Length: 449
Image 1 (cartoon, rainbow, N blue to C red):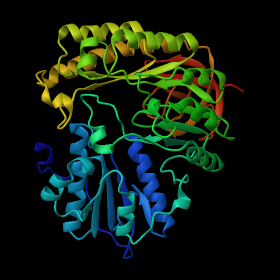
Image 2: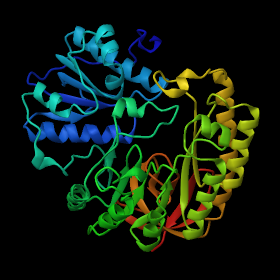
Image 3: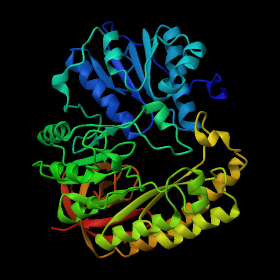
Image 4: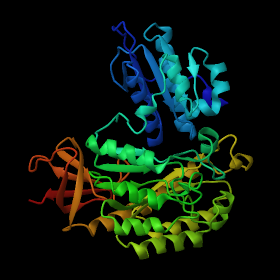
């Protein structure tokens, strides 16, 4: 497994000076991993253990690395981080290094052989085992409570774990296991706790959010969950991510339409615009069905921002299939789009297919799609000039306060920039702004008095 080839450490770890145990959790990968790290942090502190998340200090003697194993680049970054802290351990700068998360779940045996200096490897569902290393117990009374590792005005909420889908390119079921929904009552309790702590926006995440409830309620119950969360006092925005298109429950869009605090925003990964490639991907749908779904969603809720992701270079994607995806993007005019190049992942169904498209061709195709999207995004943003929007302020950066409309999620979407020399905004507050200018991915605005 070439991914585990030794590589040079990219960071310098300074000598520590604190003598008592201090734990630092380092998180790689996606928001779902971040939630896992926050749960671990909460449990450690709940057991009286001095723990922090990516503290940035040099006085931590125990390191827990929560890894990502999704695609090659993410795997290599996780491995480099492990090697960095293993080297620090060998220099006597830290005492113990523990590794958990998706990479550890997927390649535990290989990692144990190749990096034996790590004190223990854990899988994605091994929280009690990690706590045992600290002579700590899993505290059930902390379920629904979670220390946030970022500004408290927004919080990710993982509504389920794992995935039952057979997508050809995806190793998530290998790393995360089968789909398990969290009960509505537990999620409502978590939302109430977050609201009491000042959280105003909930970002619902999962490996497959539209599958929610099938295992415990014997029906797709995402719409009911969203209604119940919408009733929680203090939650101003609820945002839906990772909605699988096949079998998409349209009542979710009806709930968005009827509830003011559910954002008119949908993250729905479509992956491709060619029926032949969608078949090869084992997505259980066709281009026509996907287009009909998007049209149906927009018919019910015209004022919706749809975010999707596509994969360039999947086995079976010839020039014809790629041009079909280009046409798909041009016709659908998605408000938000991300494009990834195909990664040939071991143990997936697509790994049995020939990965014959050169990486540079995959990247060229991805870049071309994003160039098309830039123009679409620019045109859509130009239409916003002169209009007023409700914006949630996330941070102050340079000479601007930076916020988001309901049509934009954290980190991945457009931002609203407000001149800090002319206006004062408080992070975590909502303000009404008037858009004065726009680029492909940013809006410039003034605060409405």
